[in-house]
Length: 81
Image (cartoon, rainbow, N blue to C red):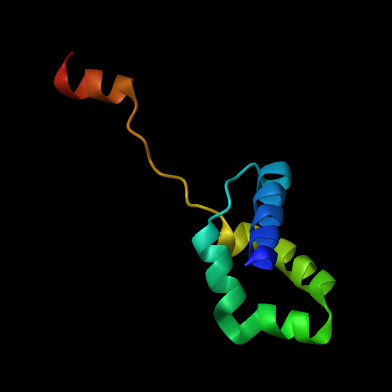
């Protein structure tokens, strides 16, 4: 549990610092479980490689999607407020 928290914290920091996005913890944990990545990295002692791979796929798959927010100006135009 501690290692997963550490990895999610690193993913969050990386996403905010370099991508200006928010990391999705659900996606990060699912990515770690898929193909048994975390267990393999611990077993072989290659956590560094895991962090490198995490950085490569962060922007493509592991960040939260932007939600389309309707602005106040839209509501004013639409409903003549």
